[in-house]
Every structure is written in C-alpha cells, then in structure tokens.
Image 1 (cartoon, rainbow, N blue to C red):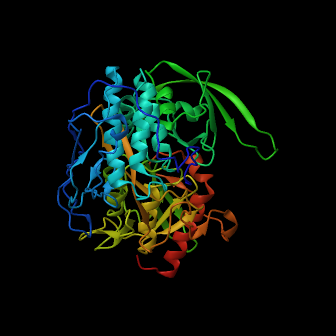
Image 2: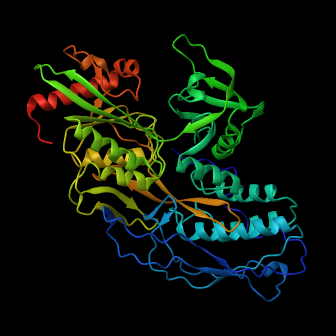
Image 3: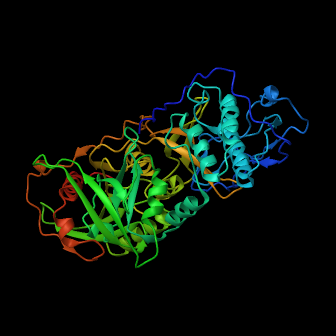
Length: 519
C-alpha cells in the first residue's frame, strides 16, 4: 500500500496560536505498557531482548506562561524501540535508554475531553518512540503535539477530540498508524478471537483513493450469498455515505445482533461489457464462524496412472487459532495417506503476524529464516526458526493472488524462499509493514507501524508484492487430468473442480512427482 497524502502543512511556522486561558495544569503519570512475551521456542529474533517496556511521562507541576507552555518538553533519547519486534499485541522491547520526559498541558473544562488529552499524550509518546520513520514524515513531532493540544483544548466532545488525534496521525503519511475507539477495538478483538455477529465481510481502505473495498467474503456468509465479492467498493451503509470513514468504523456498522439486517450499497467496477454496477443489497446478520480454515482431500490419477491424494487447505485469515487449526488438519491428512499439499492463501488479507510465523513452522525444519525486519534506524534482524521440525515433507504448492497480504505474504515468502513450496497464482498485494497494537488507558487502541519486513531472500514486499513461480492459467496444462474425488466435503466440490489455479497446482505437483523431486 502506498502512504496516504496529507493536506496538512508539514512545515508549519514555529509560532502557534496561544492556547486559551486555563486555571490549572494536568498532573497525571502516564505509563507506556506492552505485554511481556516469552519467546516461542519455535522461532525467535537474533537480538538480545530484555523487558524494559515502561516509561513514565509526567506533567510539569509549576505554572508557565502560555508561550512557554510546550517548550517544557524535554527531548531525550527514546527508549523502547520496538521496531522489528512488535507483532499484534505482543511486544519485544530493547533496552531503554530514555530520559524522563515532562509534558505540561492545560486542563479542558470538559471532563470527557480531559480523558482524550491524556490519550493524545500517550499516543504521541508511543509514536515518538516506535514509529518506523524517525523523521515522522519530515515534520517536528514535538510541535505536532503542541498544535494538536491547542486544537483540542476548546472542544466540548470526546468525538471531536479523537478526530483531532486522527488528524495528527494522518500527517505521518502511513494509513496503518491509527487510533481506534474502545468500541472499535473490542470489535477488532472479536474478529481476531473468531466470534462475530455480522454479514461476513473483510474490508479495507484503498490507500490511493481512501475508498472502502471488499478484501474477501467469508465462505457461505450472508454477504457471499448476497453476491458481494472481492473488489466491490462500499458506498453506503444504511443510507449513510462512507466517505472518509475508517475501515474499523464501517465494520462496526456492518456488525449487529443476529436476526437484524443492514442495507449496503456497493459499486462493482466495469465488467467485460464495459458497464459498471451500483446496487443496494439488504443483508440479514448471522453468527459468522471465523474459523479461518477449511480443508478437503483431492484425489486424482496422475499422467503415469498413480492415484494421488492431495490435501487442500484454505486459510482465509490469520486469527489466534489459525496455526493450531492448520496443524490439526495436516496431522489428519497425514493419517489418511495424503502425499502432497495445496495451501490456499488467496484473498487472505493477513491478521496476526505471529500466527503466520507459527504456521510456517508446520512446514519447515531447522533454523531457517522466516522473515527479515528493518527497524527505524535501518537495522535488519532476521527472525529464525529454532530447531524446527516439520509435520510433513510432502510436496507443497501455495496459491496466492492480489488479495494475499501482510501475514499471508510473510508465510508465502518463508515457504518459497526456503525452497519448501512452489507459488502459483498472481502477484500479491504488497503490504510489508508490521504494526504494534497498544491498548491505551481509555480502552482505545493505537496501531503503530514499527518496522518493515523483507522476505528471507531479502526481497522487498511493501508496495511490490511477491511474484509467483507460475501464473494461474490453464493454458500450460498439456494433458487432461483424471476425475477429482472428494473424501471430505468442507469445501464445495464444484468450486474446486472449476478452479483453474487448483488445476495448475496439481499439474505442478505431478511434475515434481514425475521428476522424483526431493521434498
């Protein structure tokens, strides 16, 4: 994804409007917290890690005149540079070398705005210490705090104050660094935990336009049955235009109690006849099973007459259960005599990066590099397996396309660059940034881009994507395949039989078998 352009002046004058008069200064200790995480023995960073992820920001206790109000910010070395080590809510932190940092700000007369003022300082400090771009998009980040606090002071509602924080974050030029409300954060956690009431859509903001587009539909969900598909643009929800709305906010509007309905207006791009389609769909909400994995056994005869059994695993997202679900499916297949595998990551928008790393260890041995991270100082650190033992060494094909992003690209790159899998399909999305997620004192959550990642072969992924070994076309098939037989019916038989990418994947597996390729 490309960074969003900001219409905020990135080189503001140093003289700012004087804040309104105030009667007191805020005295609140603010602690930056991230969860301590015991390194998984299956993979680890090649860095010396120790827990020091606590830094206190206090407010200046003595009165100051208005002009000096924000000059009391003491610049010091930032201390918990978590770049290259923060995955989802899990944070590895480097030794802290920070000085005490003091911030003074005038207390708003509106109590709910006071809370947001504290959130502003928390968010500003975390970004100051961890954001992947140490220039903060070539602007004075300390000055941005001053400007935003001045703008928040006269406000009377929390929503308006949160909007000012979002405006401040937008100047970083990174759509993935954002603040979400307590309510939206709870919805995000529900999605990661796999419990949801809604319509079954994965949506994301297209960074070039800001439009909300469908990344994928949960198979068999109300949205899928209504004909909504990947690439559709969401225009309205219940008659409300979505211009400028964040993806989390739109997702919240789509969720609701089972039995209720929501009306969605979607736009589909031009079809083969050159016509565009704008239509309104009423969808009834249901319980959405977010178990991200479905599986089948595909049996067919190879060109040499051998009856082959291929384990097909489709992973739609990287939730907390993704790696465990995949491991269970592979062990079940192994007990049934499967001799090759297809891992389908098409239209998988990502999710928890740790889940992608854990999934890689199912297929890899030894101490292979899974991904390389680059922090804000340009330091590269590999994340390696630690004495990995693959469940299976059978031949593997991974399916990817333009909807495969983030953790999907990490997993696909790890399997491909270590010689474990052939990639079939189309170039991936190209999201090579890693975010940390920190829950703030008010229950909101700050997503911060803390690192970029490269594939094990040091290939750039961000805004580039991964190019598969074989394009997904049926023209390369030079011999008809035998009938496909299904031994498990969790995936539609007809859809698998009609899927040209699966046909190409099976062809590649046949080639490996005929050549006696070691796996």
